[in-house]
Length: 148
Image (cartoon, rainbow, N blue to C red):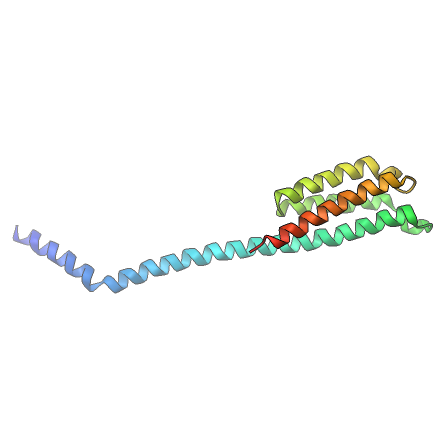
């Protein structure tokens, strides 16, 4: 019985003697957990920023293509088939961004599919595409503003 009391005293004494070490371990584990979480969030934000800037550049190129198709007389600058590569690239990039940008990119794809063949001859078709581009651009900018 005496050995049990000594072991209880020794555990209590050990906790007192090693309190600083135990507190240090808790702080180290907490710091490591926070640092890991913060690094993951930073990496996510970096990926969203990079893809968002790529989307914005591709949207500018697509808008330029649509404007040339409708307004420009120079046939060399009219290449509506090239627009498909922009639309698909944009749609792929939005997978790393917000759900709203994904929806807007899907809308752009649908609008492009319905309007690209007549965009050089019909202002309505051209305007439909430009409206979808503006909507996606707005959603991308909103996504960028919400990042930490």
